[in-house]
Image 1 (cartoon, helix red, strand yellow):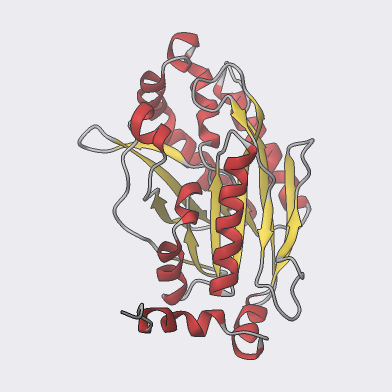
Image 2: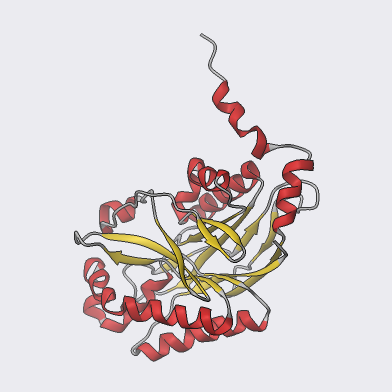
Length: 291
């Protein structure tokens, strides 16, 4: 697999009164990434919550009502991403979306769109206290591995990145790239996810990509404060940055962060690196505490 360019969103939450305003925003973001030769675009966790603004204050100020209202534009949202992925021959990780299930519950779902249709999706597996206790978003049950034109990809939605066995199963099944859409409202939250991402990149000797929501949206009951920097993390070894950070966005503006990823470099470092974290992982389970 040859080198490809990734565009990682540091994504601001908008406010819309008409669907066309959102469509124009998304098309602008996508066209900018295309102009910069990106092949894979990554949007953040819960970036879709900006769509709640379409339904008026009574809805967007109510945590539960906004989830229900957003189902009415979910198919339209999917079709827009499918069209853009096909039109520009892209792979797009759409901002995660609260998708209602047949039993009435909601899942936080990140969907990967390709030029020929939906490639797959990942539901968030470990819920934060806010999702569990206030928002009542339900946890997914299955770790997914998604086949794409650029190789096998895993998705760890925000908090999921802090639990190593999720990414480990994806990497052992063939993923060299883990996408982490995130939404955090404090610096501590951003750094928790960042530390998780860097640990996953180190222990699995793979690329991990973090795309956060960014800035303030005081109108929103769900995503009013957003803190984070779009980043691409790598193994810490020969040919990679000494601190394991390939690129990171600034703290002032929303926008894309770009990086060129080389899947071949991942395979090589697992065979010739200073250390063999990926290979040596099973050693942990062979060790026991002395009685």
